[in-house]
Length: 287
Image (cartoon, rainbow, N blue to C red):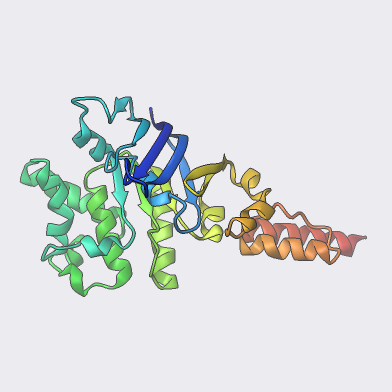
């Protein structure tokens, strides 16, 4: 099963002279097991797109289906869709409002009408998934936690709904380097160990190059690239023209290539660069 968007348009202030087309003819499929990076400069339509994935926004025209459920059909089970598709907004800690970590994470499952025992089980599991010790944090006020801890509480609140798809809109925004790395490592772990399908909205080319297996690039409300990492970054000249960057390590390899080093430029992670440079250096020694 999958999430499918077919010829989706979304228009703000439709039927007036100042209407804005935030999404234009979007066709996209998110398949089970995908780890997709969604990138684009501010205003490209990324956040608008991801809010269509769980029916928070509905297309002006076009079709969105989640595991076969058409969200526009009369009687569509939108509640079921939102349980399947967990959406973590940018700065999700701003949505924290309960007095304790336990109560905040339990809010969603409680609204499902689950019995106390099942709620407690879900809260414990969600906290374990984001590496928050249950006994240490359950009674703590979320408002006194660090930025990274608050972010993990917010993500745990979504995970407690047991979604199949996890959509994260700039999950590391505003965090210090340590908190940022912790969140990204936990997202990778959730994808691998819990087999969650993940869509990661990010401005960081370094992050998406290291983490995802497919990259979707948006520009002015349209998808201009939708392919494997290596294929998308082949278009680095055009990416830079539309205000995006390429991974730092790729810039290094291109610069070395320009200086005469026989290295590949289609390298996007530090591990790949290290292996390539060692190969070249050993080759020179043996020459």
